[in-house]
Length: 411
Image (tube, rainbow, N blue to C red; front, top):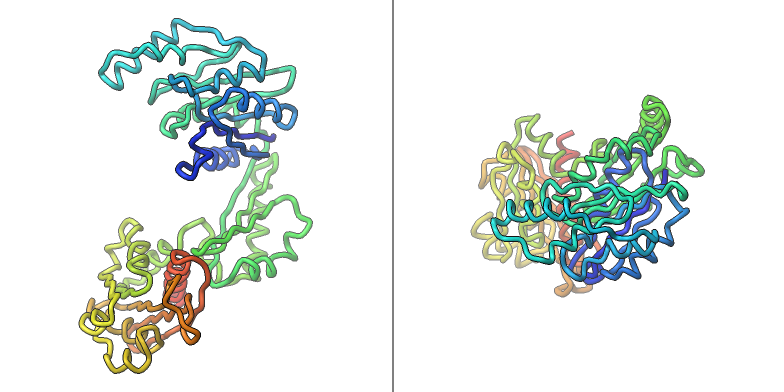
């Protein structure tokens, strides 16, 4: 089963709005064993909407359309469907009354006249009532083309209940059982991961393996399909086993968990605590750690010691070391990690100092140079790293590497 997604909205073709609906719809379809063949963004123009629909006919059995179902003149999805399928739009008075009642319930105001636009239904369509908002959606079947259209409102809170209402139909269309697993990897770049796993995935179509890279980590998305659930699970587990052999401890999660959660769970399990001192990362590491619910169980203190004076006064970094080696140096990162651990009375301390750019670099200390210190009772480790990318990417790489240093020490 192949599905195609059309996101309607002129604002999605500007830098100010992103099409996040397609991402979530894709995830839900994958869970049902339905593969997405394409995603298209079109403006609020009935001709463009119709053109997009017609171009997908014969290329799949399901088209999902989101957006453009509101009451204003620029909501043109109904008209686009009408033109593409050559079906009339029929005004339904019963739906009109229902929409007006929904509007009064939600807003406590009298409904405006333009709500009537939402009561026009493509000929032969099944109306999907909106349990959150007012705009109805549609399920349309075109038997002669072996095609179904699922037409949903744009707001996620409104389309998600409609999607669930037709979930069983979609599941029946999917037919195949699907098993999906996401492995998350630290300490290796995308090319290194691909090089290690390529003998296992070259020429293999089931399961399919997709490699995704970001400053946070590298992810392996493994998807297997089969008419028997047990067979799909077996295919995934077999591939996971092969990846474990070549990637080892670089795999930090087999269940799509972020690194900060994995590290937090390890700290909690071992009854250990953490404090961090940040310079170039500006609090990003503390943010990632505290973004995990329950992080107060193990996270004691985060200090953004951006200036040299703050490093000296708050953390006890040696003024002599800053003068001799500079703030971005191994001795300073070491003292930051030790100082914050002692300040908080924590089991582990992390210190990060570097040059995030885009300015401030020199030939001796270029942009992207970062020193990361990790201290514990009786020991300290400092690693020198050189990251590339934007300011935010360098900050993110730095925090990910710091978390991975701690993870490896904990295991």
